[in-house]
Length: 441
Image: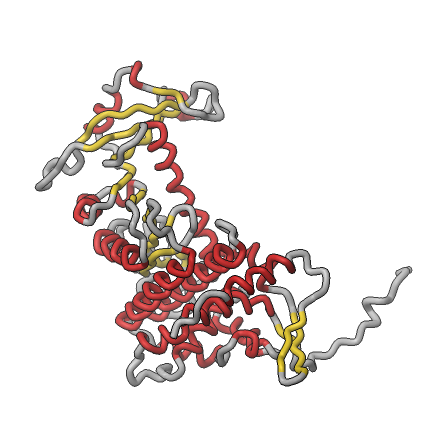
């Protein structure tokens, strides 16, 4: 026999127009307003005579705020139309059917217009305090597979190198902050390095335009070990650190390093990892090839593993033109793996794990939306809270998803939030700091 019937006796009604779903979205909405995001979209995005051409700023912001609220498909945007939520966001929230028409109106040139928008808003956010200024900045370059299903999606009908159907976008991320500097959708069967040279050149130009004046360094894995990538870095005076693809020749070069040249590094297995360096000329058959540092980490296989039966050491090597101690540079190169946290946040914190349209350009616009939402979340934490990297799920739980109620008194509207909210002080502090950003005229 149940001792309490309290929950069963609650009466429920969906009838309050003053309640606000995800009232905490006031924080990123305030930041977007002060950065002039809607005005940038209205200025630079021109869909011509397409059906979704009207009110493009409101439509894009609806998709961005839906992603911040946890929506992973177009229909989820309808949650922002409930109660008084629209008044908190500061723009006209559009219906899901309208957003679908909007995305299907895109062609590739329109996606590039969104690139212009993201470039401008990156510069404004960095000028507001989220940027590196004159300090050195490392750009992590990578790609990822966004799996899709079925045969009706343009650009995703063929299998990727991981033997699944999907898209293969390029990503450039600011190390240490997780800001997505640039993203570009590619078809699933695209080789990792396809278009990487032009993409990197545009990323570097965007970073300089946004106000980064310090030394730039580019880190990448072996998928981007290509002459075009190195040539762009040298032409634009950017240092590089790129994992090499080992050939028999480079393997012989590595194995020729004397035993006394290896220095031990911290590792979970005592004496299990060492670092050394030598000189190597990558792409020697290309014009202007010059020797660079080849830094190598050797690791003993895990005892008892099959690899331990076949080899004494496993080697991991990268080329670099940076100055510094070998051990420090090797440790910094391994931190390139932190970009996987950003990719995970885009896929499972935002909605990049789901590309909703059958049209390639529409999915390119969807990628741009997820990047804008991701960056708004990062800047909200950095400018508003004064914190470094905070995952979107944490921000959503603590700041974005709290409910609220609107009241009106003496011609002034107030937003009432739950009493005893554990993160109320941080939320209120963030709102004050974000409102202090000068409005873009």
